[in-house]
Length: 312
Ligand SMILES: O=C(O)CCC(=O)C(=O)O
Ligand SMILES: [Fe+2]
Image (cartoon, rainbow, N blue to C red; front, side, top):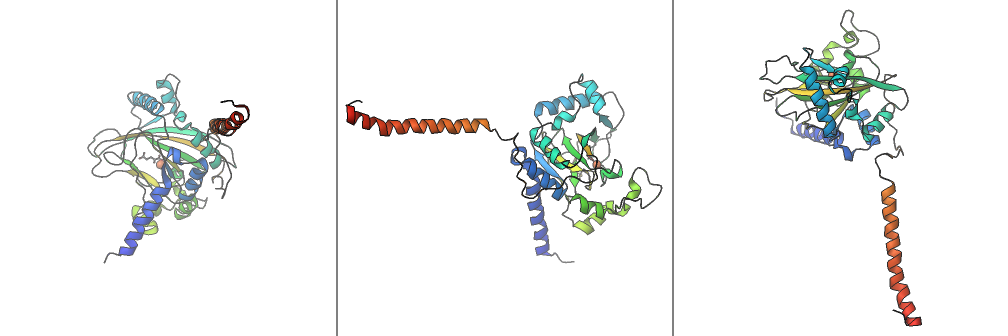
């Protein structure tokens, strides 16, 4: 089979464009842009979204909890215990940008905190009790069908030396249809909600056949960065043979009372008021204006006065 150069270049270009669209530092996102991108592509990456102090304190609490359990997960209660009640896990995403984003996702429904789950994915050299990388899945296979927003937060740099995440950045409705979901079970006797989905859809070859070999988003992340995803996006752990070290991360989830997120409002005039410092620029502007008037008085009025009254 020959190489289809235009097709190859097109794929590379589309992937580059998509990464630029979904992946930005926190200060380059507005809640509206983040919401519209999340609805369109099923996910988004926010760089430097989490305050280092909260990230480190939460990681300390999670490590302390792991020292006392054989469970592969650590949950919110353990974080509370280990931090003396100071932390629950939810404060990781308690920022104006993410709060406003969530209120847009759930604009047409009530919603609540759902769960906090920390996990550790082993590197290839490790022979530990840490989890093996998770295969491609939808969280809806295991959790509720109601729309769940997941903030995935790593505690160390990941994607080069240690495992990261891979996602298929396709909108939630296309993903739902692709996975064969109709709201009725397709197969009986499967565990959790797995019987509602076409099992073949989760095989990597099927995903590539439907969405192309460049359909995966596999970000390299640093502490403070996070991925926003949902229970309706195909995703799994991403580990290569070069990833010798393990990775610790936490998932912070919110859930609505509907299966769909609120619509992305085209041309929405919503003002991200808690992101824009309103008072200071206005003060700065009026201070500048006053200085200009004073200067004007000096330039226009003083020569006139000295001409009339000989004053200087
Ligand atoms: O941490 C991972 O590698 C997978 C996490 C995951 O599947 C999730 O956050 O839903
Ligand atoms: Fe998952």
